[in-house]
Amino acid sequence: MHIPLLVKLLILLFLAWLDVYAYQATKTLLKQKDRRFAKWVKWVYLAQGIVMFGLSTYLFFVQRGTVSFMFLLSIVFMSYAAKLLAVLFVFLDDIRRVLIWFFQGRKRRYEKRVERGQKMPRSKFLARSAVAVATLPVVTMSFGIVKGAYDYRVRRRRVYLPNLPKAFEGMKVAQLSDIHSGSFFDKTAVQGGIDLLHAEKPDVIFFTGDLVNNQTKEVSDYMDIFSKLKADFGVYSTLGNHDYGDYMQWSSHAAKRNNLEDMIKVHERMGWRLLMNENETLKTGTDQIAVIGVENWGAGRFAKYGQLDKAAMGAEGDVKLLLSHDPSHWDAQVRLQQPDIDLMFAGHTHGMQLGVEIGDWRWSPSKYMYKQWADLYKEGNQYLYVNRGYGFLGFPGRIGILPEITVLELTSRPLA
Image 1 (cartoon, rainbow, N blue to C red):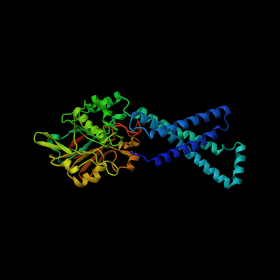
Image 2: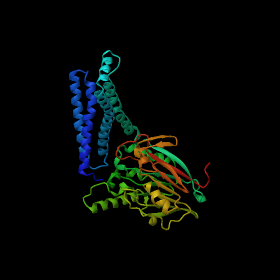
Image 3: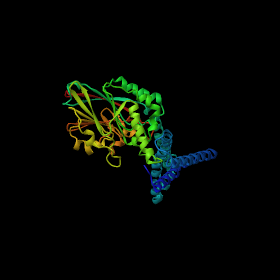
Image 4: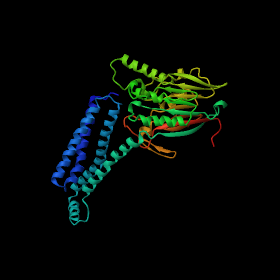
């Protein structure tokens, strides 16, 4: 995504202002400190400010989606998130100062009470609060990187499909989505997640897009792991918005086209049946269900390569399952144009890699961008399952919304 130069400059100016303003809390705390110590702290703050500002500028001009980019972005984000929280407290203190300026008499009475030891100067209290609160983003995000990035969770659901053929009763469908292999930095952990999936003994495996961040070669080191995915009915996949190379500057249109061709070959070499606006039929005796795969189609600014009518054309089966990367596709086209599609599998949102889940209750900033952003949804007789993602992008970790392996059991028997 191209960011205009003026926008970049405005962002950098804001970050510079944030650094200066947050420094006010530090100055307040240093007033009663040893002069040499205070001077040393000031120089350290100045040095980190220059480094963070330099990294911020650098990140505008390097390739996004690489492991190094994500770690640098996380460092910069943690730094400025901490300063932003600190600024909120400093801003409160500035409001206090303005009010005191208008009410000088109150100020004098307040200062006399302080001199008698009756009360801590509020400005110092707010400064200490600012510094304390500023540590929260650093601690939380660090935990998300160390603990959350590969803390895979198997999420099991049963889905009632009254037309499900008898031969497919109890069929276990495993789903992976949003692998983003260019983000990984722990191959052993990635293998551990695949082992978890195999332990579920699924009948069929679906992958719903975003194998990479920017270019096909990112998956090279992980092909030996993902090619081990096996199931009786096979592995079926589709493409996500990141798989087309749209977020990278290519030397030519031919180079971008070759990247997509390589992506198609990778799916083939791993033994995955890539469905690009087409469908397959799963058969057991005379019973059959259809698996439909559509290319990426997203509402709003996301690429629309999908051709739903073409993908569903000639699909045979009493039950139809759709693989479509972006959940916004469900409301925008699927439910309106293909009411006979029983269950759609999607991903894309990652649950923003940030949120809270307690039992069946969940919250994430993702909910303000997507009506359906995680887990199972139903409208009429149609279902949508949104996988929270296997990998990560941008922030190299997860806080609250953990990486997911989905296992759906299909049944024609009403759920209790």
